[in-house]
Amino acid sequence: MLMFNFSANHLIWLDAKEYDRARVSIFKDKDTNRCYKIYDYQKKFEFCADKVYCISGKLNSADKLYLILESAKEDIRYSNFKEQSSAKFKVPDQAFLGT
Image (cartoon, rainbow, N blue to C red; front, side):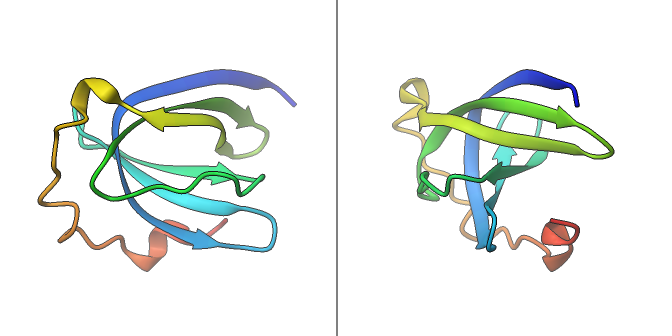
């Protein structure tokens, strides 16, 4: 199985669901408006909707792409940023299907 590094900045946490094996979080990139499904298998990270984050981890490319979280911190360059639309942004239930 191939593993590649990934990192992303300027991300807003939208929602998370807890499963037996992992906590799955949805993040929105403020620059591209893309959403990412991030897997935290250690369940050690907690996020707040009003903060901006930098995350990094591994990209698992078996039969399906999984972004596996290894580290996360607040993106201090954007620490004064308040996301007004994230509170109104509803993550569709389908975002968590196939986890």
